[in-house]
Image (tube, rainbow, N blue to C red):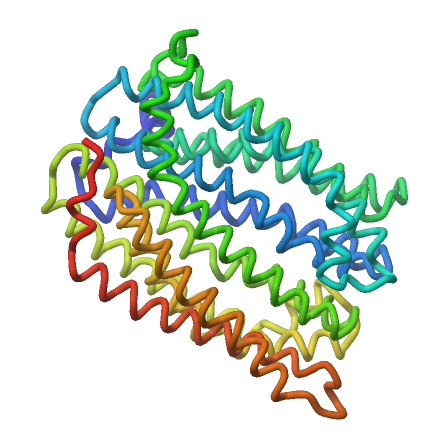
Length: 459
């Protein structure tokens, strides 16, 4: 029995065995983990939204800014994940360990630089995007504390990506669940008991993330497949770091473009007043749950494809791609139906204002079909990244986000100005996002079927 448990919790070699079973065994912990990760921000929103007037809008105003600043972490994590998976599949232990060591060093340097830049700029950035005057002080406090705790969040997410690269999705899940329970308890203590407001929610999050980071780094050190890190593994290897950044920067730029688009659209939302900002952030929180299967199967695809590309098993790569995209499609459809049926009740967790709930539900109705479309974009993008083609997903995101979504959102908002909506209808932004998701799915499918991503392996 003990041996079976240990086997279940160990890293997986996805280059052999039943594809569906392997993907499910790898993905289910990721789904649970993504659910727990989403609970971090959702619990903050629920606790603050019910305890602090304007608190939900204050947190919502910071959301796109925080997403934009993590683009460097996204770049390093993606590059490391692809390299770890391919070296693991090729059984190249030396480069595998060096990749891990250099990744940990790089993320430390990047985080220190990022913190020193972002904290002083928090309020000016919020002012730049027209954050309402009645919430800007709270939003600034939340943003500064969140930036202060970036090192914990960075090491947890990078460390989890490294463990997933060798097929271990269980251990990060366990540590994330521990952290989520701790975050919930601290949220209630700091916000409801100590009356620290949105700052209390921020402190609860970063304390929990630091603890989870310590746990996941200790697991990396103990993982046999990685081997125990030596001092030489942490010494900068410029060739390896260059390769890591070449692979990862397109993913980081992709995340940056998406977040930049969110900031620009947030500027439109902020002009519409606190009520619209609250409705929008409630939808974003539920949107995070609807996007979970997409992100999950995208990560699973990257690891699966990476390992099998490393093992030079192209037939298994093709079969695995079909299985993982079908899984994402089915699960996305189910979650979309749940939002359609129970959307109002779920929005009621964030606000007791009937108008906020109604506006939020109308926003979600527009996006329902989009969740199914974007499942294919993200999953097939994960396939391409796993093979080493990180440029194609970046260019697709650049086109549909920068050249379609943002201009369309501004144009439709301008056309929808009316006595009811003097600053334009908030629904126009969701229509623009839906159009970007659908077009992105079509373009991604075209490039996937062309098959050039299969020739991008690093080894």
